[in-house]
Amino acid sequence: MNEFLTLVVIGVGTYAMRAAFLVGREAKPPKVLERYLPHVAPAVLAAIAAPALVAPRGEISLTETLPALIAAAATWLVWGRTHQMAVALIAGLGLWWLLLFGLSFVS
Amino acid sequence: MTDLPRVRPVSDGVRDALTVVIAYIPFGLALGATLASLNVDPFIAWTSSPLIVAGASQLVSVQLLSEGAAPVIVVLTALVVNSRHLLYSASLAPYWRDWGRGTRAAGAYFLADPMYALAIARYEGRAEDSTARLRYYFAMSLTAWAGWMILTGAGVLLGAVLPESLPLELAAPLTFLLLLLPTLKGRPAYVSAATAGIVAIIAAPLPLGLGLIAAAIVGMIAGALTERMQS
Image 1 (cartoon, each protein chain N blue to C red):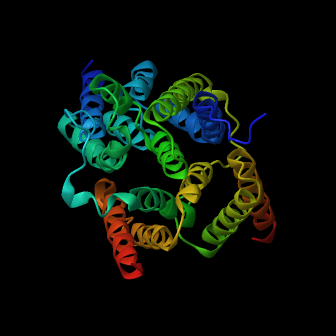
Image 2 (cartoon, helix red, strand yellow; image 1 turned 90 degrees about the horizontal axis):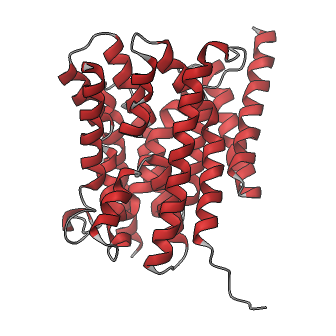
């Protein structure tokens, strides 16, 4: 029960952050932030993706980082050609598996 | 027989969301399986999906609970991890200005990472009236939300029988890369993404996911400076 209550509190807090600038009488971001808002999406999404792309399983090393970065580049390339998110994801994941499979023979 | 582009915000929203749900299958199932394997009642662990709607912090909070951490620590950790949502809230405010207050309050509940990424890509990519924006947002976010509930639920139920043979760790970061790509329009966007990415890698060892929010802030500043130099 305590565990459930803790999750409820986190949920309420998270909702408060999501609603912060959206539920006032007027939906208005603070003036201070206005210059920076156009860059929220690229900055936050890159900050989420980058660490896990260079260390998908928690360590940065040649055999871990290089296959992941090659797979990321392939994903980017396929998305640029097709603009199909699912297709690009499957291509990137598939290439990553192939590279790991190949490495398992070498090492 | 017109040359006007057909505007179909609802079906576009459902389609975009389904694409993201498909991309989230590995991450959602893996998260559900992890939730079920911990020292917390699996159903209670799963309720983090409708309560929090944010994968990373669901994982962190249930893991901490499973280790018997104090509730106050769990709450503070999860909220710091989720602080980026403040930025999403500010970023979408101009686009939701004409909606009623109740509608905005309801929309805020669904404002998780992929919903934000799809919404901002749509809003920046085409000039639509506020009704079309609203229809797109709710069709997209309801679909993605339902998908997240089902995926994490399936992960909880199937956790024990999921094959261990295929490594899926790269699925989530590749999904975020694919959410990032449509936002890369113009040099400031590239600069803020590259800066944030590099800072996030360097700052990854920081506790509480602070590296993420620090990187986001540095990236946003870099983007704003680039924009100023261009004009």
